[in-house]
Every structure is written in structure tokens, then in C-alpha cells.
Image 1 (cartoon, rainbow, N blue to C red):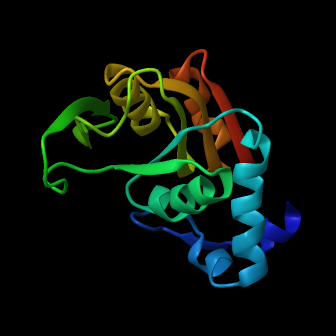
Image 2: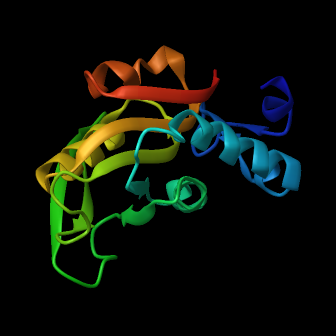
Length: 171
């Protein structure tokens, strides 16, 4: 895991002063780093009967599609408003200052389908919680959530309740 952390670029004061941004593009550009990230996200779920991977916009698409392929599952995106072309279900959720929303196609899941939610980062947990609510609202069974990075001090796990949370790298 230290090798993966060493491949992630730290960018101070991005996107605003006081924030330390973990830039995963430097990890993704190296074949060994990319493979290690995908394997670390997928391997724990190889025998869990995952039928659908839901990737959260936008870096969750990178990891989610590859994890779905590795698990022999389907993939569906959860997007910011206005990006999906068909009928959608929307979930609005609170941010530190204001609100945001996520959308999923209303036919993206089959009732009872076993779902793994994937994203690059678990911070406060709001986006992941909203995604889990969307999946459950469509009748999907959230088996687990998997993240490449967890910002432990932000305590995002607490918003995810009883769901299983797997993180690869902790900061």
C-alpha cells in the first residue's frame, strides 16, 4: 500500500486554500499502479455474487467499470444532474454549504440485484450515502462500498451506517 501512496501526487491548496488534494492521475498512468488499484478494489468481492457495480461520477467510472469487468458484473453510472439521457431517479443531499444531487436511470437495476458501489474517495460520506439511497430506492441490495482512498478524519463511514465499507488507502 505504501507503493501505491507513493504514486499519488499531493497537491496543496487545491481546489481551494487549506485543502490537500490527492491526485490519483499519477497512480493511474502507471500500469502497475493502475492494476494494483483495481485489484485492491475488486479482490475482496470476488466471491460475493456481485451482479452490478455502480460507479460514482466521475473517478468512480474509471475504477467501477474495471472492477465490474474483473468481477464479471455489469456497470451503471450515478451522475450529476442533467447528464443521463433517459428517465432518472434523483437524490438531493446536503453538503457542508448547500446541497447537491445525483441521478441514476430508473431502469439501471433489477430488484434484488447485488450491488457494489465504487468511488475513488470517501470523505464525509454524503455522496456515497446518496448513491446507496438511490440503489436501495430502485430495489438493489447494497452489498458493500469500495473506495481507493479514505480520509479518516472526516469520518465518512458513520454516514454509511451498516453497509460494508472497504478502503484501500487511508489518510
